[in-house]
Image 1 (spheres, rainbow, N blue to C red):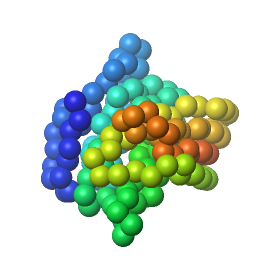
Image 2 (cartoon, rainbow, N blue to C red):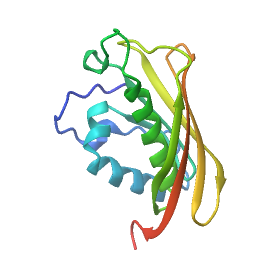
Image 3 (cartoon, rainbow, N blue to C red):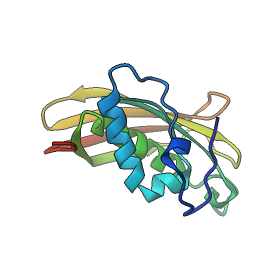
Image 4 (cartoon, rainbow, N blue to C red):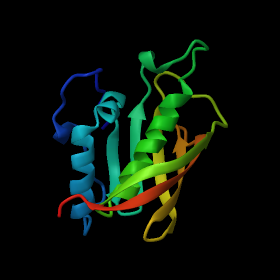
Length: 161
């Protein structure tokens, strides 16, 4: 189920989240719920969380009319923002506050109104202070529309201590 959110409407978190992987990931779930509750931009994007676990996340959104640029295709910031949120969820799901140090993105194909985008974040490397992630964004036809690479700094601050 895709939940389409309208800009700045308060939406219960139960409508935003669909967790496909629940096993031992309750801490990851708590962290991501906390993040989404305070992240008005991700709420505006209409992000739906599918998989939440430490080091990995899968999220999606549906591209709306107000997300297109002057060329009639989705603004690059939409795919970037979706990938950035996937990075944030995957890296913070360990329970330590992590913030982006560097991000880059490539757009091999255009995105259009009505497209359903899915971002899959996968951890490439993790140390005590630095994490590196690769995020692939695909559309509903499983076409790759963005490749995102992000590096995060892992602070010593824990979410629930």
